[in-house]
Length: 105
Image 1: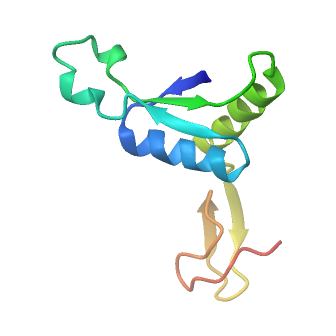
Image 2: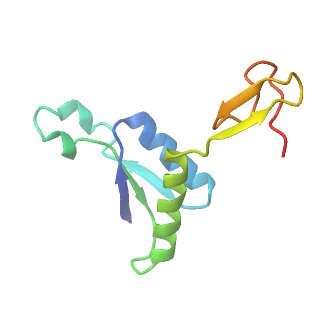
Image 3: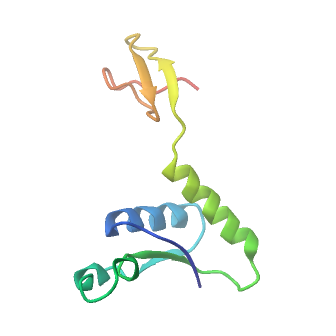
């Protein structure tokens, strides 16, 4: 196992680990409940961590996991007109906020 990153909270750590698992990279959250002892430990040692299961020499898997995590942290922003109602949609959204129609391919 190798530590991929620390997360600011348990919700993000779980989201990131689930996203990696869905992409075929075995991941789990360590120190999930260590935030309850944040006053006893330094804050950087009580944050949840995302770990991936890999062989010690498998750097390709680690770089793929880092790339996927980077994509999740910085979603692509788009500017597209809705084909249903004509509303302009900005941001990383794939559905129109006004009518719910999917973004065109």
